[in-house]
Length: 265
Image (cartoon, rainbow, N blue to C red; front, side, top):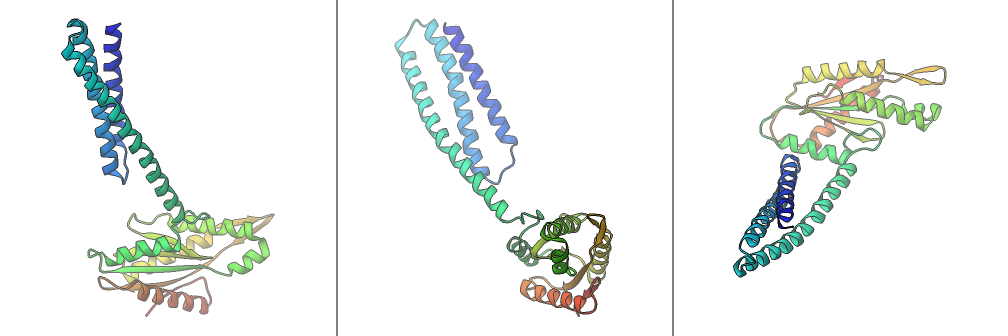
């Protein structure tokens, strides 16, 4: 009956409004595309609500020609909006899928930390910011990792990398950046952190790694790390320069006997 169609039209209009509300609450980097989709949903709701009114008026007006003309406009609007929505939804899916793939490509599969490329991009961006003149870079290397792999196997080595990476990421500030640079080497950038504080952070991390216990059969295995520190004291400090200094400090830490922190000077 006509009243059933009126109620159905208004009900569907409310569903479109509720769907728009869900998209409004959704956080996404593609705000402009989601805005287009939300506008389309609201237009759908408006047209459905208008459709309910047209059906009601058409029933009361005994099929007046003017209302039939308006009903045709409503149907045409439905068609246009449906086609537009059908174009936007696949576009959103592709964009979200591509973003997900990019996110996975920027994360190390084993540790869940940013890859070398992703870390360097974030670090360079942080170094170029005007609000932090001081940055400390910590280069962390697991001591004797090749021997660990050879003695206990690659599965055990993967467990070491995973747990050390997770431990390094714990307790850091939101502005700090940690990543796996490759192999058994990690890097941590601490914006706004002085030499003394960076050394304190490095000592704490080194101590926490040494407390990690790894079990291989009935044998307990301990791991240590060497850490090299370099500090920038000016805005727009060159990343390559800072990385080179931290890498030299790491080399010195390993040369001096490992399981220690060395500050570039």
